[in-house]
Image (tube, rainbow, N blue to C red; front, side):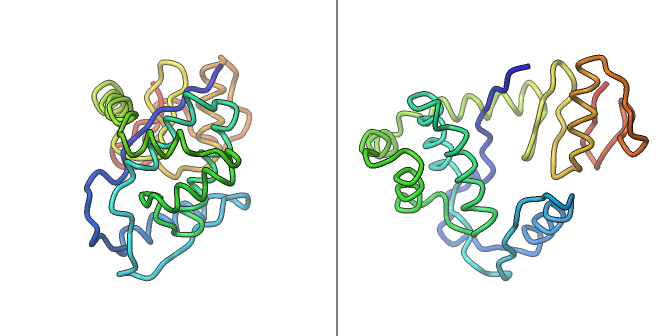
Length: 192
C-alpha cells in the first residue's frame, strides 16, 4: 500500500473576519481525546481569529509535494501542528513562509512565487472536487484504504487499523475494533 496525499479545502471561504466558534472547539476536544498519543490541540477561545481560508496552505503543500517530495511529510505535519496545535493562521503568507523556511531550508523563493502566482490552485481545486464527487468526502481527516468507503473524522486509531486489516484480508484481533460496514458517526460509513 502506498500513501497518496490529496488536498481538501477545509476552509473554503475567504473571510478575514472569520472567528473560532464552539463548533470548532468541540471538534478539537473530540480529536484530542481519541487516544493517549493524540497530538496536542489548542483550544482558542470562542471569537479568536480563525484562518480566512485554508487554500494558501493547501497550495503550498501541493507545491512541496510536487517539487520537494522528500520534505512533504515534514511540511504537511508542520502545517497541521501550526493550525491545530498552535492556532496559527496557515492561510497567512508570513506563517507559510516561516514554516517553509523551517522545513525546506533557506531558499523558499520558488514556493513564495508559486503562491503569489496561484500556480497550484487548479490542482488543489481538482483534488478537492475529486474527494467530494468520487468519494463523498465532506471533512477531514479522510482516509481511503483500497476501494472501501473513506474513514472520515477524528475517529480512534483502531478504526484506521481495522480498515487496513480489511484491505489486507486480515482478521480483526481486537474486539474493540469496529466490524466491517459499521457506521462510526452520522454520515460516515466505515467500509463495505
